Image (cartoon, rainbow, N blue to C red; front, side, top):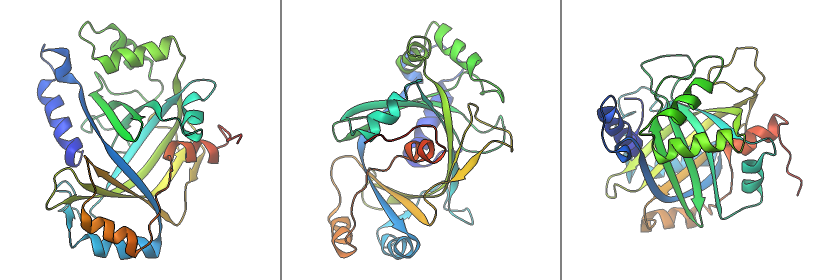
Length: 268
Protein backbone atom coordinates (compact mmCIF):
# COMPACT_ATOMS: atom_id res chain seq x y z
CA UNK A 1 0.00 0.00 0.00
CA UNK A 2 1.09 3.52 -0.81
CA UNK A 3 -1.20 5.45 1.49
CA UNK A 4 -0.51 6.32 5.10
CA UNK A 5 -2.61 6.32 8.23
CA UNK A 6 -6.35 6.74 7.85
CA UNK A 7 -5.98 6.94 4.08
CA UNK A 8 -4.20 3.58 4.07
CA UNK A 9 -7.24 1.97 5.67
CA UNK A 10 -9.43 3.66 3.09
CA UNK A 11 -7.37 2.22 0.27
CA UNK A 12 -7.38 -1.27 1.73
CA UNK A 13 -11.15 -1.36 1.98
CA UNK A 14 -11.54 -0.04 -1.56
CA UNK A 15 -9.09 -2.60 -2.90
CA UNK A 16 -10.98 -5.43 -1.22
CA UNK A 17 -14.22 -4.27 -2.79
CA UNK A 18 -12.80 -3.73 -6.29
CA UNK A 19 -13.80 -6.23 -8.93
CA UNK A 20 -17.09 -7.44 -7.49
CA UNK A 21 -20.62 -6.08 -7.40
CA UNK A 22 -21.65 -4.68 -4.03
CA UNK A 23 -23.65 -1.77 -2.73
CA UNK A 24 -22.21 1.31 -4.42
CA UNK A 25 -21.35 2.93 -1.06
CA UNK A 26 -18.77 0.18 -0.53
CA UNK A 27 -16.61 1.77 -3.20
CA UNK A 28 -16.67 5.25 -1.69
CA UNK A 29 -14.71 6.10 1.43
CA UNK A 30 -15.13 9.36 3.26
CA UNK A 31 -14.31 11.20 6.45
CA UNK A 32 -14.82 14.56 8.10
CA UNK A 33 -12.38 16.29 10.46
CA UNK A 34 -10.73 19.57 11.37
CA UNK A 35 -7.50 20.58 9.65
CA UNK A 36 -5.33 23.41 10.95
CA UNK A 37 -2.34 24.62 8.90
CA UNK A 38 0.84 26.35 9.98
CA UNK A 39 3.69 27.69 7.84
CA UNK A 40 7.10 26.90 9.35
CA UNK A 41 10.57 28.05 8.41
CA UNK A 42 13.38 25.49 8.55
CA UNK A 43 14.47 26.24 12.10
CA UNK A 44 10.97 26.19 13.55
CA UNK A 45 10.14 22.98 11.71
CA UNK A 46 13.20 21.26 13.20
CA UNK A 47 12.34 22.47 16.71
CA UNK A 48 8.75 21.30 16.45
CA UNK A 49 9.69 17.88 15.11
CA UNK A 50 11.84 17.32 18.19
CA UNK A 51 8.97 18.39 20.46
CA UNK A 52 6.36 16.32 18.63
CA UNK A 53 8.37 13.12 18.88
CA UNK A 54 7.60 13.10 22.62
CA UNK A 55 3.93 12.53 21.78
CA UNK A 56 3.81 11.19 18.22
CA UNK A 57 5.26 8.29 16.26
CA UNK A 58 5.97 8.04 12.57
CA UNK A 59 3.03 6.73 10.62
CA UNK A 60 3.60 2.95 10.26
CA UNK A 61 3.76 3.35 6.49
CA UNK A 62 6.97 5.42 6.71
CA UNK A 63 8.42 4.10 9.97
CA UNK A 64 10.91 1.81 8.22
CA UNK A 65 11.76 4.21 5.40
CA UNK A 66 15.13 5.89 5.68
CA UNK A 67 13.70 9.39 5.19
CA UNK A 68 10.29 8.68 6.82
CA UNK A 69 8.28 10.33 4.07
CA UNK A 70 6.42 9.68 0.82
CA UNK A 71 5.55 11.64 -2.29
CA UNK A 72 2.10 13.08 -2.97
CA UNK A 73 0.98 14.08 -6.47
CA UNK A 74 -2.38 15.75 -7.14
CA UNK A 75 -3.93 16.90 -10.42
CA UNK A 76 -6.53 19.57 -9.63
CA UNK A 77 -9.66 20.46 -11.60
CA UNK A 78 -11.39 23.82 -12.01
CA UNK A 79 -13.69 25.52 -14.49
CA UNK A 80 -12.82 28.21 -17.02
CA UNK A 81 -13.65 30.98 -14.52
CA UNK A 82 -11.44 29.37 -11.87
CA UNK A 83 -14.37 29.20 -9.48
CA UNK A 84 -12.64 26.90 -7.00
CA UNK A 85 -9.61 29.19 -6.87
CA UNK A 86 -11.71 32.26 -6.14
CA UNK A 87 -13.95 30.44 -3.64
CA UNK A 88 -10.82 29.67 -1.60
CA UNK A 89 -9.35 33.16 -1.95
CA UNK A 90 -12.69 34.70 -0.95
CA UNK A 91 -12.88 32.44 2.10
CA UNK A 92 -16.24 30.82 1.35
CA UNK A 93 -17.33 28.68 4.27
CA UNK A 94 -18.71 25.97 1.98
CA UNK A 95 -16.61 24.99 -1.00
CA UNK A 96 -15.18 21.91 -2.70
CA UNK A 97 -12.80 20.78 -5.44
CA UNK A 98 -11.94 17.63 -7.36
CA UNK A 99 -8.48 16.17 -7.80
CA UNK A 100 -6.84 12.97 -8.96
CA UNK A 101 -4.24 11.79 -6.46
CA UNK A 102 -1.40 9.31 -6.64
CA UNK A 103 1.90 8.72 -4.86
CA UNK A 104 4.57 8.67 -7.53
CA UNK A 105 5.94 10.91 -10.28
CA UNK A 106 6.36 8.11 -12.83
CA UNK A 107 3.64 5.99 -14.48
CA UNK A 108 3.38 2.80 -12.42
CA UNK A 109 0.41 0.46 -12.48
CA UNK A 110 1.25 -0.80 -8.99
CA UNK A 111 0.70 2.62 -7.42
CA UNK A 112 -3.01 3.39 -6.96
CA UNK A 113 -4.78 6.44 -8.33
CA UNK A 114 -7.83 8.00 -6.72
CA UNK A 115 -10.51 10.52 -7.51
CA UNK A 116 -11.04 12.76 -4.51
CA UNK A 117 -13.64 15.36 -3.68
CA UNK A 118 -12.28 17.56 -0.93
CA UNK A 119 -14.31 20.33 0.59
CA UNK A 120 -15.10 22.41 3.61
CA UNK A 121 -18.35 23.12 5.38
CA UNK A 122 -17.95 25.81 8.00
CA UNK A 123 -14.85 24.72 9.93
CA UNK A 124 -14.85 21.01 9.12
CA UNK A 125 -13.01 19.49 6.19
CA UNK A 126 -14.42 16.46 4.41
CA UNK A 127 -12.99 14.15 1.79
CA UNK A 128 -14.68 11.56 -0.41
CA UNK A 129 -12.35 9.17 -2.23
CA UNK A 130 -12.84 6.42 -4.77
CA UNK A 131 -10.25 4.32 -6.63
CA UNK A 132 -10.13 5.10 -10.34
CA UNK A 133 -11.66 2.37 -12.51
CA UNK A 134 -8.54 2.51 -14.69
CA UNK A 135 -5.21 4.39 -14.53
CA UNK A 136 -5.11 7.86 -16.01
CA UNK A 137 -3.25 7.85 -19.32
CA UNK A 138 -0.25 10.03 -20.11
CA UNK A 139 -2.21 12.24 -22.48
CA UNK A 140 -5.80 12.66 -21.23
CA UNK A 141 -8.27 12.07 -18.42
CA UNK A 142 -11.22 11.64 -20.80
CA UNK A 143 -11.44 7.79 -20.69
CA UNK A 144 -11.68 7.85 -16.91
CA UNK A 145 -14.35 10.54 -16.98
CA UNK A 146 -16.43 8.56 -19.48
CA UNK A 147 -16.02 5.39 -17.42
CA UNK A 148 -17.10 7.12 -14.20
CA UNK A 149 -20.15 8.54 -15.97
CA UNK A 150 -21.22 5.28 -17.58
CA UNK A 151 -20.84 2.81 -14.70
CA UNK A 152 -24.31 1.66 -13.62
CA UNK A 153 -23.24 1.44 -9.97
CA UNK A 154 -21.24 4.67 -9.93
CA UNK A 155 -20.67 6.21 -6.53
CA UNK A 156 -22.12 9.57 -5.59
CA UNK A 157 -18.64 11.06 -5.96
CA UNK A 158 -18.20 9.55 -9.42
CA UNK A 159 -21.59 10.82 -10.53
CA UNK A 160 -20.89 14.31 -9.20
CA UNK A 161 -17.51 14.38 -10.93
CA UNK A 162 -19.09 13.36 -14.24
CA UNK A 163 -21.80 16.01 -13.82
CA UNK A 164 -19.34 18.80 -13.06
CA UNK A 165 -17.16 17.72 -15.97
CA UNK A 166 -19.93 17.69 -18.57
CA UNK A 167 -22.21 20.46 -17.25
CA UNK A 168 -19.83 22.83 -15.44
CA UNK A 169 -16.84 22.25 -17.65
CA UNK A 170 -14.28 21.45 -14.96
CA UNK A 171 -10.97 20.21 -16.34
CA UNK A 172 -7.41 19.70 -15.09
CA UNK A 173 -5.61 23.00 -14.44
CA UNK A 174 -2.37 22.24 -12.57
CA UNK A 175 -0.35 19.57 -10.83
CA UNK A 176 0.95 19.86 -7.26
CA UNK A 177 3.79 17.69 -5.94
CA UNK A 178 5.31 17.54 -2.47
CA UNK A 179 6.92 15.22 0.05
CA UNK A 180 5.02 14.35 3.22
CA UNK A 181 6.31 13.17 6.60
CA UNK A 182 3.32 11.87 8.62
CA UNK A 183 3.02 11.37 12.37
CA UNK A 184 0.29 9.67 14.41
CA UNK A 185 -0.58 10.13 18.05
CA UNK A 186 0.29 7.43 20.56
CA UNK A 187 -2.80 8.30 22.56
CA UNK A 188 -5.48 9.53 20.16
CA UNK A 189 -6.05 7.65 16.85
CA UNK A 190 -7.85 10.68 15.39
CA UNK A 191 -4.91 13.05 15.86
CA UNK A 192 -2.33 13.32 13.05
CA UNK A 193 0.37 15.79 12.07
CA UNK A 194 1.99 15.98 8.64
CA UNK A 195 4.93 18.01 7.37
CA UNK A 196 4.73 18.86 3.66
CA UNK A 197 7.75 20.35 1.91
CA UNK A 198 9.54 20.56 -1.45
CA UNK A 199 6.29 21.81 -2.98
CA UNK A 200 6.19 22.26 -6.75
CA UNK A 201 3.47 23.37 -9.15
CA UNK A 202 3.37 22.28 -12.79
CA UNK A 203 1.32 23.81 -15.60
CA UNK A 204 -0.24 20.72 -17.16
CA UNK A 205 -3.52 18.94 -17.80
CA UNK A 206 -2.17 15.41 -17.25
CA UNK A 207 -1.00 13.40 -14.26
CA UNK A 208 2.41 12.59 -15.71
CA UNK A 209 3.54 15.57 -17.80
CA UNK A 210 6.60 15.75 -20.02
CA UNK A 211 9.82 16.96 -18.45
CA UNK A 212 9.53 20.10 -20.56
CA UNK A 213 6.34 21.20 -18.73
CA UNK A 214 6.73 24.44 -16.76
CA UNK A 215 7.42 23.59 -13.11
CA UNK A 216 7.87 26.09 -10.26
CA UNK A 217 9.02 25.71 -6.66
CA UNK A 218 6.34 26.84 -4.19
CA UNK A 219 6.89 28.35 -0.74
CA UNK A 220 10.69 27.85 -0.89
CA UNK A 221 12.27 27.51 2.54
CA UNK A 222 8.97 26.70 4.25
CA UNK A 223 7.11 23.61 5.39
CA UNK A 224 3.33 23.34 5.63
CA UNK A 225 2.43 21.64 8.89
CA UNK A 226 -1.10 20.23 8.89
CA UNK A 227 -2.75 19.22 12.15
CA UNK A 228 -5.72 16.88 11.66
CA UNK A 229 -8.17 15.81 14.35
CA UNK A 230 -11.71 14.67 14.88
CA UNK A 231 -13.07 16.86 17.65
CA UNK A 232 -10.47 18.57 19.84
CA UNK A 233 -6.79 19.38 20.07
CA UNK A 234 -4.90 17.64 22.89
CA UNK A 235 -3.80 19.84 25.79
CA UNK A 236 -0.11 19.22 25.11
CA UNK A 237 -0.48 20.61 21.59
CA UNK A 238 -2.17 23.73 22.95
CA UNK A 239 0.93 24.25 25.08
CA UNK A 240 3.14 23.95 22.00
CA UNK A 241 1.02 26.54 20.18
CA UNK A 242 1.54 28.96 23.06
CA UNK A 243 5.23 28.19 23.56
CA UNK A 244 6.13 28.71 19.90
CA UNK A 245 3.48 31.37 19.24
CA UNK A 246 2.12 29.39 16.31
CA UNK A 247 -0.39 31.15 14.09
CA UNK A 248 -2.82 29.29 11.85
CA UNK A 249 -2.69 30.20 8.18
CA UNK A 250 -5.15 29.72 5.35
CA UNK A 251 -2.81 28.32 2.73
CA UNK A 252 -3.91 26.27 -0.27
CA UNK A 253 -1.29 24.36 -2.23
CA UNK A 254 -3.27 24.55 -5.47
CA UNK A 255 -3.95 28.28 -5.07
CA UNK A 256 -0.25 28.88 -4.41
CA UNK A 257 0.54 26.86 -7.53
CA UNK A 258 -1.96 28.57 -9.80
CA UNK A 259 -0.82 32.01 -8.63
CA UNK A 260 2.88 31.20 -9.09
CA UNK A 261 2.24 29.77 -12.55
CA UNK A 262 0.18 32.79 -13.57
CA UNK A 263 -2.92 30.68 -14.19
CA UNK A 264 -5.18 32.72 -11.89
CA UNK A 265 -4.93 36.01 -10.04
CA UNK A 266 -6.23 37.19 -6.69
CA UNK A 267 -8.08 40.39 -7.53
CA UNK A 268 -8.62 41.48 -3.92
